[in-house]
Length: 291
Length: 284
Image (cartoon, rainbow over all chains, first blue to last red):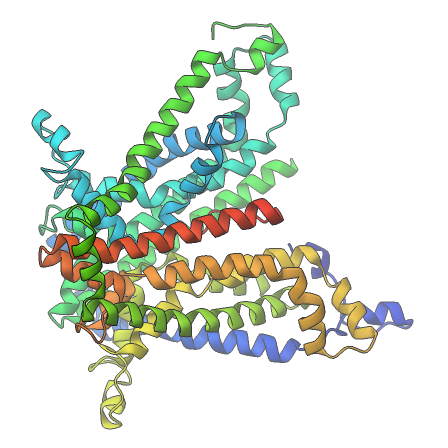
């Protein structure tokens, strides 16, 4: 985005036009100063509390709280259910992006708007609605429970809620790339005798893979930290259906700040790793495009 | 795989495959997105319109609505100002560390809402950094409105900046440079040149920011203290009513939030259609 400007030298050159390249727009000090100030006050200083609290704790205590059996069970559920949900979203998100980009059908505009519902619907509303649907006497629960599938108040319920909140990340990541895949390469593949499925697997899928992985990672990252839509449907049984963010809240309610902080640090580190992976995928995708 | 080498057939799926793909996609959306939305209104209205209206007009519900509007009225304008200021600094000037700064602005997106609340408890709570000082001066932040506003501002921090930075970067600096060299002041340049260029993108960001500010649950839940009629926002009120098995009232308040979501989606779609404006990516 800034590639054109990075190399611009700051030296004043003779000749008015060169001089104008930099510094005639006012407000640099003011706007950058305000930005940094606001960033520090709202984001960086508050976030640093977690780090300092952890440093006060000492390694032994940290490990004892952050990796207690109950915490490990919560991480396993949070990461496992998020991974499963992101996987479901990768498959169906790709499918939905595909029909939105490639096909025309009645009501497409509404479907397109509906995809963003999870961005707009408050998570608590999604949580109680999903619980009502999947509980024993709900529309879907009353169909599923007789055949032995219990969704509400089980880890499956957690995954269902995470599918809900993660779907648009995959669709919106894949869509623009999918519409950029040139008809010419597909035509070439077809005229060389490739079947439709072969073309998809060998031509289209490699082109959209970075976007699909980015969407997967974004959905995963969102799901790991998700709280509102999950706690209603989860049942919240320690060791079974208790997610990591809920464990933080539980510790806080017992005024166990050290416990809450230790688990928060693990969650923060996990989300930074995902953030890093997303950046790597995008760098890889850019490098591939240049080549 | 049945179709080979005829280039037309190779370029398109058979009508049957196409219908099957569309049907599967729509079924998935219907099951996972549409049904929850419909069930909110169904559950809210299942005992009729009378109890529905009663649950919304109940004093605690009204207080929750008022608080939610207040919080949004403070945090959204603050984020508008920040978003514009940050985008101006980032897109109109060159300085080292710019992409790192953008990463920092995006940071709240990758922090769990619960952690977003926790950090303010660690700062301003009774045992927090400023806890003793605040108590001495009789200022309450946690379990009070200021804490809710702060947590909401953290959660929505990147929304406006995220929409504006790519937009303003694409528009470049020529217009502003021309205005300044013709003698306009910085403020005039912003007001008459930049703002008209970015208004739809700004509106788009504000829309999403507002939806999130009014609907935020996790972060607010940690700092609010859940005092009925005082520190209960609408999403928290939904939770309290639900946990009291007062389902009709809970879904009634929830249906207002669902309406807000629908209005947001309609306006957003309208902006995309009319002005060809589109979000910069799936990072919300």
